[in-house]
Image (cartoon, rainbow, N blue to C red):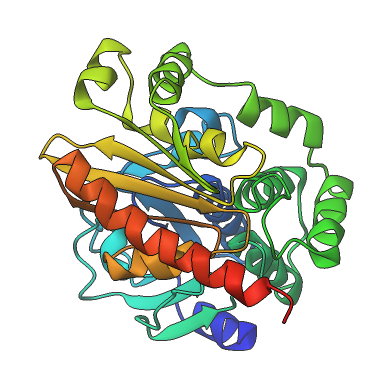
Amino acid sequence: MVSEVLKAIEQHDDFVLTSHARPDGDAIGSALGCVQIMQAMGKRAEVVLSDGVPHIYRGLPRAGEVVQAHQINGRYRAAIILECDDLQRTRLCGWDKQFLINIDHHSSGKPFAHVNWIDPSASATAELIYELAQQANVKITSEIATCLYTALLTDTGAFCFPGTDHRTFALAEELVRCGADPVAIAQGIYFGNEFSKTRLLGAALSRLERDDSLAWMYITREDMLRCQASDEDCEGLVNYALGNAGIEAAAFFRELENGRWRVSLRSKGSVNVACIAGRFGGGGHECAAGFSLDGPYEAARERVLAPLRRAMKGSANHNQWP
């Protein structure tokens, strides 16, 4: 499939690269790595995102060149959509004239483009971007390596999610050999939080609840205002619920301005949360997924926890010895 992507790239000169709204580490790292690879191939390429670059990733090479917009510039003849299982999730308009290339590793990925490279066996989209560079004979510079290592680290949950295997660490090793600094990258991501995020975490943890191996917590708009928090301060908070002994799945609920609730789901591997998110129009990975639904909170919570409980019960029964 990488050969089809390369063939399509050869046929165009101007590219816009993008990913999903509320971009995570794989979205940012893969886009920044890929745009440098495209430029090394002699193409004109630019990264455009609807929500811009989150604070913790702004130190990555070329992050300052990312354009934040809601409309695709008409001069682009082709587009590469990265780590995004549905075109609408980019929250960008103006896709009617571009030749579309879709590169993704989500199990929920959809073949919406003219050329689709979807490989759920990859631990991160960055793994596919690295393969693209290899096949295109593009040298992995230290800047490209830094972007791709960041993507790999974050999308594997710091190498904790199922699917992390010898190939993951082989790629991590190669990226370090090419100049990625694993200590600096990890400290920038995990020790670089804004104070507002830490305060918001306190509010969420004060409402932490559990039912057997399921945990959940929530924050309100009032919490967001009191903590002077931004939307990106909510990223990763669900992991603090999942990180407790005996917890197999966790949910984090965030109240939106329109009365809806944003839900982040995480699993240690026994529950496929992407399937549950798909029922609500969302998507993601088997161990990390998200979606939005209508409130009020109590109703939204029960709508989400019910299928989680069923899935966890089914998993427990499946794993029992006969």
